[in-house]
Amino acid sequence: MASEASEFHILLLPFLAQGHLIPMFDMARLLANHRAIVTIVTTPVNAARLKTVLARAVQSGLQIRLVEIQFPWQEAGLPQGCENFDMLPSIDLASKFFNSHSMLQLPFENLFSEQSPKPCCIISDMGYPWTVDTAAKFNVPRIVFHGFSCFCLFCLHILRDSKVHENVTSDSEYFKVPGLPDQIEFTKVQLPIFPSDDMKDINEQMLAADKKTFGIIINTFEELESAYFREYKNAKQGKVWCIGPVSLCNKESIDKVER
Image (cartoon, rainbow, N blue to C red):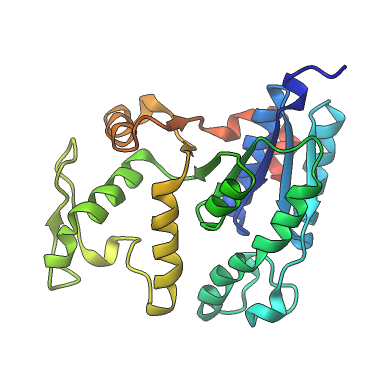
């Protein structure tokens, strides 16, 4: 009979960009090293980028699976084959690329229903806010994975609550972010929370999903930014876990090169 640990099955859904795919795959290795079954869900082009390093991981005894879902390039108004952010011929297509990820919900849910053993958790990139609803549908927790720091996340949390930046009239005027352990100033154009008009909907969806997510995993470590980790953890009722740097799971030079 399989052990209870080996039945612990986690679905990972990375955003379709190398800066998201690579650390998500590293996290898959970390989870599999703790005897979990890990299934990475991605599109054919992105799966092809992972297959070489995945094959070595599987050969080493890790239970990591790679499952493909078709990318809706035509419905999204994108060129055929543009399944990764670095393949876009123009940055003007960025909003269409972001919005295309919402079209993956139904195929992802169909795939979820087919998995054995049944997944007990979904870990998704923040770019898939609909995974909050999918997790609720299947009665499993949804955890969001962030590749950036507690400092950045806590700054964004404060700005969303205080809206201090909305009182600044000039894009080049510096303003102080209240409630931080240190005195930090930004200009509006330095902030990542001011999307173009065609990105506002997805940004609002991500903010709403962030409030409902079960927990947050961050690719950082507490000692690097201890004060900001504590503040952000308190702001999120304790459900914040630092697991980085996840890249340290790569012990062999070939794995580091081919990531």
